[in-house]
Image (cartoon, rainbow, N blue to C red):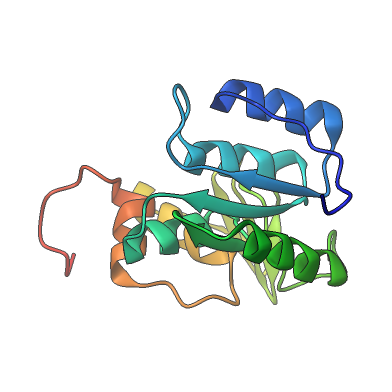
Length: 177
């Protein structure tokens, strides 16, 4: 009704294939999918696309919202929802210019993109960090924390978000680690 061409996908794998083939401007993504969950789909889409992503899901917990936004979603709506509100949010996203590439130093970086902050350089694929041209040895946790924080340098990360992103959703232990 709003004049958009819509392509549907029934599961996470199909969503990834459609996102690659159709190269959509906006993706409306559920977190609860039959094979690959929406968080992982969002994370993978961010490796090859700068399409706007709206999470539309029944998961209403603050942690779910924070994780969805941290992995690359541009907006998050919970069910039940108003189709008119969804259309308005998509319209609002489409009015904003999408920043991509090196010109957007504060734009969310994809999981595999090299990132630089002053003298600090980080290569997520090689799991290497340099400061002023010298390689820095980091533990797995130290690297994962730096990687997670540098993907969204403009965003405040809560302790719970970092626990989920670095230690994983099933981690049990002191949250002051």
